[in-house]
Image (cartoon, rainbow, N blue to C red):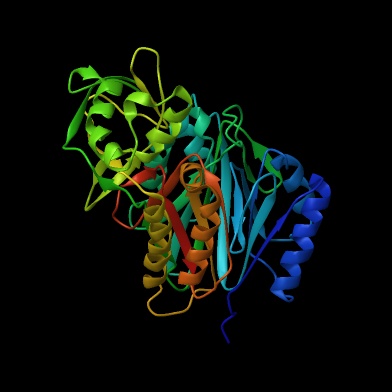
Length: 394
C-alpha cells in the first residue's frame, strides 16, 4: 500500500533552543508517528538560523533539513515576526540537497558545489521538483536562478526564495543539514511518484506604456527613455494617484517607499509580467531596485491595490491546486515577498489564510523573502519580486 503523504507545520517564539524544541514536539505530534523525509525551517534574525538547525538536526533523524533566514514567517494560521516556523513532509518521496559557498564571487562554482552528488533520477519516482534557497545580498539572484535551472534542466519545476534579515539588509543565511552560511546557495531535489503543484501570481496590472531603461548601474536605474528615472515614475503615475486622492507633489520622503511599492516595474515574461520592486529614490533622481535592471530593459510601470494582492495570493494557490489533477492538497510550501507584507500590513494574514482555504484548508508554511523563485517546466521566468509562489503536495 502506498505511504500516505502527511504534512505538519508549526511556529514558535522564545529562546532559540526552546523554540526549536517546541517545533520538534509539535511537528512530530502532528505527523502521528510518520517519519519525515523533509523538514524546512524559516527563522527570523531573532531566532538565529545556525542555532535552530544545530538543535533540530539531531532530532529529525534521517530527514533532510533545509532553512533560510527571513523577513517574516507564517503558517496557515497567519503571519508573525521574530519567530521561527517549520514545514515537515512525510510520505513516499526521496529528497536530496547540497550547499554551495562563495556565491558572490563564483556563482557558477557555488551552484555546481551545491549540486555535487545529487542524483538526476531515482527509479520509480518519475517526477522531480527543485527547491532553491539563496543569499540575495550576494547580488546575483537572477543569475543564480538561471544557472540552477540550466544545470537541473528546464524539464522540471524549480521553486524557492531569497533569504531575508528582517529588513536590516546586513546578513542573510541559508542552511542544509546542520550547516548554515551566508554568501551561499542551497539546492534540493524532491523526487515523487505524482506531480506536485506550482502556482505563481503577483496581482499587478500595467499602468504605463512600454518604457526603456536607457542608463543603469547594476540595480540602480538612472534614466528611463533618456530622462531621470524618478521624473518618469512620477509622470506616469500622477494621474492614477490623483484618482485615488494622492497628490504626488506633496509626497514626503517618508512616503516614497510606500509609493514605490504601489507602483512597481513589470517586465514581459511570456503571457504575464515579472515584477521588479523599486526600493528607493537616490539624490540624483535615480531609482534603486531589489535586483538588476540592465540598460535596454523594456518594462511597464504597474499598479497593485491591497485587494489585488489578497486576490492574487488566492489565485497562486488555485493554480497550484489545479496542477494536482483533481487530487486534494496535503499541504504547501509558500514563498512570498516582504513587499507584499509592506503593502498589506495587517491584511497579509488574510492573504495567507486565503491560500490555505484555496487548498481546502491544508496546512502551509513559508517565509517573507527578498525575492521569489518560480520556473515551471519549460518556463524561464525565474526570479520574481512581490509575488506569491505556492508549492502544493498531493
